[in-house]
Amino acid sequence: MSESLLVEQVYPRLPIFLQNAACWYYGKKEARTRFGAEFDRRLRELLDSERWHAGEIENYQNEKLRQIVRYAYDTVPYYRERWQALKLTPDDIRCREDLQKLPVLTKEDVRNNFERLVSTSVSKQRLIFRHTSGTTGKALHFHVTKEAIAFQWAVWWRHRVRFGVAPGAVHANFTGKRVVPLDQQTPPYWRWNRPLHQALLTMHHLTPPKISSVVDFLNSQPFEFYSGYPSIIHMLALHASETGLRLKAPPRAVFTGAENMLDFQRRAIQSFTGAVLTDQYGCSEGCGNASHCPEFVYHEDFEFGVVEGLELQPGNPARSILCTGFANEAFPLIRYEVGDTGVWRGDGSACPCGRESRVLLRIEGRRDDYVITPEGTRIMRFDYVFKDAMNVKEVQVVQERLGEIVLRIVQRPAYSAKDEANIRHEINRWISPQLAIRFEYVDQIEREANGKFRAVLSRVEAPQHVQAEQVTH
Ligand SMILES: [Zn+2]
Image 1 (cartoon, rainbow, N blue to C red):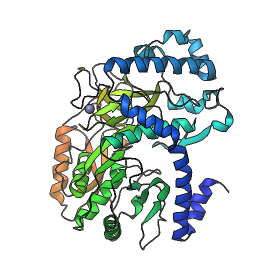
Image 2 (image 1 turned 60 degrees about the vertical axis):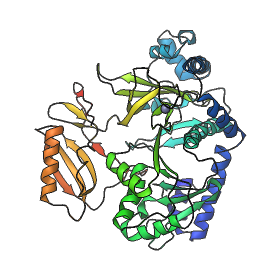
Image 3 (image 1 turned 90 degrees about the horizontal axis):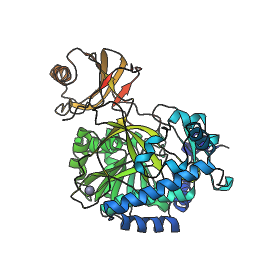
Image 4 (image 1 turned 45 degrees about the vertical axis):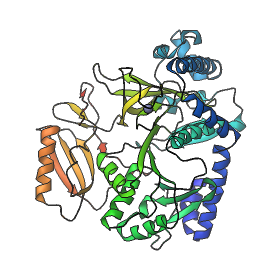
C-alpha cells in the first residue's frame, strides 16, 4: 500500500491512540534522520562559526563554492553538459562573484532534467527521495542525503538556540498536515509526536467552536516554544483572543517560516502569546537559508550555502533569490531560483548583534504573487492597506484579470459599508486610482493543499514590460 493511501485513507479511520502511535513511528524515523552524531557535530560547528569575521566567512564560502562546483562538474551530467556548452570549467569559478558566470537553474530545468541532476558518485542506497507540492501545484522532485538533512536541521536549530531553546525542548507545532481527521468534532484536536518532542495542532481545528479546548491543552503543560506557519498561529491567536482566552504559560518564543509574516498577523500573535516572534527563511529543497539573529535581522546561514540576488530590473532593490547549496551531495543545486525575492543590505554596516555574515533586509513572497495595476506596476504586499481595518479578520487579494482585483474578506461582526469604503479609498490612494475593486465576503479563506496561506493570488500572466515597484511603509 502506498504511503499516500495510508495517510489519506487508513490513518483518519484509526482510533486516536493508534494515530498517536503512527505519529510516534513517523517521529522515530524522522528523529533518526534529523538528529544523530552528524547533527550534533554540525550544530557545535555552527555555534562557533557564526562568530567568524567577514574575512573568514568569505574564505570559507569561496572554498566551499570551488568544491561544490568541481564536484557538480565531475559527477552531475546536467551541469557538465550545460557548462561545457558555455565553455565554462570549474577553474572559472574561484569566488562568490564568479557565480554570475554560471547559468540560473530554474524549477522547470529541475523538472525536465531530474535524472541527469543526480550525482553519479552517490550510491542509490544513500538517495532519499523528496518532493515539494509547491504553491503553484506543480510538484518538484529531488534527492537528498541523510547528512544533508541533518545539516539543515542543525542550521534551523542554531536559529532556535539563539532564542534560548535547545534540542529536546517540548513544543507545539502548528501544521497544515491533517494529523487530526477533519471531521473530528470532539477533543483531542492534537496528536503527540514524542520522539520529536512535539504536540501537533492542525489548522483545521483552530476554529471558534474548538478553540477553548485547544487553549486548555496549551495551558495543560509548559510548551517551551511554538513553531509553524504564521498564518496558522495567527488563527490560534485570533480566535482565542476573540473568545477572551489567555495563555497561562506562554512559550518563550514563536518560530515561524515558509510564509511572509504580515503585519496584522504579527500583532495578533504577539499580543496573544506575549512571546518573542522570530523567523527564518529557507526552502524545502535545502540549498540556502537565512535566519533571524536576536536583533531580528536575517543573516545568511553562510555555512550551508550561498543566498544570492539576481537583479530583476535596474534600480529595483528586490532581487530574485538564487541558492547554491553546500550540503547535498546527491542532487546539488547551483544558482537555483527559488521563486522568492529579497532585498539585501548593501551599505556594509555591521549588525548590532556582532555577526558579520551577509544580511537581508527583507524577504518577500513568491515572485509570481503580485497584482498588476492599470499603470503597469506590480504590487506584492497589501497588508499596510489593511493595517487599520480592524473589522477585517482575514483578507486575500485575488487578481483574475488586468484592471481589477477581488478582495476576499472574512468580516468581523462590526464590519460595515464604512469599512468597505475605507478599504476602497486606501487602495485607490496607495496602490492605484484606476484599479477596479470587487468585494467578496466569505466565511473562510481556503489554504493551499500544503496548508499555506496566500495573501496575494494572481491568475494573470505578467506582460514582459511591466515595471516592478517596491511599496514599503
Ligand atoms: Zn544580527
